Length: 636
Image: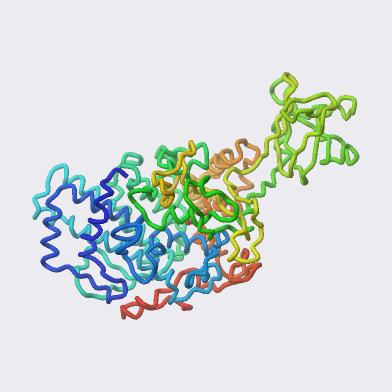
């Protein structure tokens, strides 16, 4: 986002003068006459409007008025923990099968154990952060009302620009209210229409919040700029459509009334807006991912100008430990915290249909493979290679269950076998056995130049660090228990580290909304019976993701494969560690109870059932005690 980042902290101080001073201080909003005068003087500078809008966006990225620490936006927790994305990530990921965290800070272990309560400081910090963001948006909307702008004599281009800024502020407020709806269910409700002063906001239920968010997004849709026409990291129409699609996909959870047809409509709007998927999955999570295709709405980070101990700084540092090299990730060290469970790792098992994959290559030839995979011919015929569309080039898919060796052979004849004496990809008559590790491979033989290739067929999205790590977690506190995740890195495509040469803070943006999610939402809403959904289109969208992940059509699906179980697993494969998993599991009825277990769910190594009321978090006791209008969520 091309803004004057150096002014954000000053602007944040000014904005704070007009807003919630404490989320537990009777929800006190404290503007005085002198403050109003200060605000009018501040807004005499036409650039101030955009600078305050920048503070709204920065509220998703920074944690206080100085950065990376000092004068935090919210209190009651270490400022590093308080940052919006860090708290949202913990709630959406560590409560699921996608992540564990080895730290025992305060009540943090409650997340994976599913035993949090109304006194959990992390539940409270996220709640307060959402309130803070909503209140900043409300104050900006008050300061840009028609009456205020008329009084300041704002006209012309600036007036038109401010109309767009207001639409973006309302989008950001709707985003935070969606987080509140999804996480807490019943939430205190305040807009710019509530006059500043001492009062106790009313608590609104999920249906009210759903309707408010829906109305707001549809109302600002016409004013937001066209898809891909706004400055980077600012919301446009496509961002609003994405949020509407997510709202509708989860409508049955939120209100009891399904709206899958509406999800089909709005996810298709995004798909038709001209976004394309980034050819290389890994590019979506690097320090220069602002150049990646398909990102619709990111949270922007800059290692020099948006420093905090949250955001992608947290996501990258916390995931490094064991024998991992921090320099490979563009940072100065690892925090030895986050890993994943075997439940996620196992979702990347290919289960490739070898017969179909090989038939797609061509007819069986007399050339084949012999080796440990068939007991060197003693356990059956050679594994036939297929004639490709090119003369003298043969290929085939094969699954090798254990590390071993192989050779090429013609017509099962040991007098016509080929190995590789130099291990250099060139075949030699009667040559040395070719070593190959356990895995699934596409093996080709080119007799035109006597070369061969052995390419592992694997999902490129499965970016795990396995060396020195155990698949299963015996102790959450031991970093080497559980595979580490290498998905996010603070290096560019060319391997250059981010702008903060100290290695503390990252440039990697967080892709909150991207086109691949729209593909998967369209597919799910279609399978769930959404009106207007086309199964053929849905299969095509999913197969685009499959082809990028494997580099071939080998794992493409058909309409019979497009089931809800498949979609839930595919969402995990495509979107893990991107703050979707808790919401997805709840929508599929697999977050609580015993329907689906994963390691350490409920604090038990093999997982155990947890109470269904934990599908939403409690209202923090601090706010419950401060506001008599609030009622605790059931079960807490």
